Length: 238
Image 1: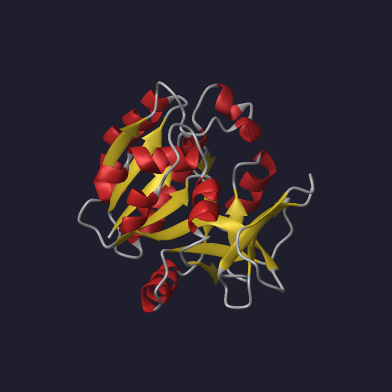
Image 2: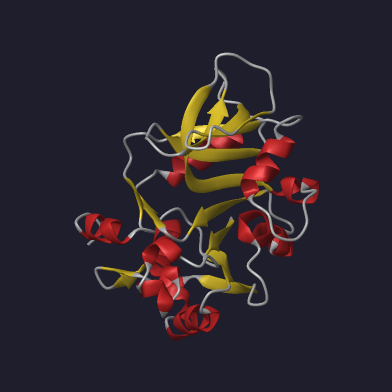
């Protein structure tokens, strides 16, 4: 099984570090977020990973080279000319997953103790196109799922924006954890082009296909995209 780590973001929340470095190389107890997530994936037998790069791309490429991928076989997807966001970045890397049944995608700026093996097992046990890791936590944006855990919409509680793609009631808010297990045929179904988010892809496909969730509430998840959370992460990830 292969994976993709999204590492192209500007990391504006992590300034001043990201004025001079890419977010993915921010350190938690001497190890970069990228290294920690390579090692996380290795725990579940995943050691072939593609990483997209844009902001200070050369620093990530150098770190991967100097450290021999931290034990993984790493391929670089170069978005130096234009950052493509999550959807565009995955579409650009689509050829990497040719021949795979499914694959994992995760953000570089999260650290988690989610049992990825259990999530993959659940994904493969039911006929779904993708499974999204979620938790019951407060945030500004939520995916909306029905009673069968089928993706039915999205909302932003700060702006009041809401998109409903399946008529179902009641709907339950779940906060996305930035980890996906995706069936490879989904890549050929992406209609968007250029720069776009996977949120748009999922909402588009959820009208006719089953996108499900894996609720890992209780398993540690830290968004290390914010400076104050690096301290929190250092208390747990030694």
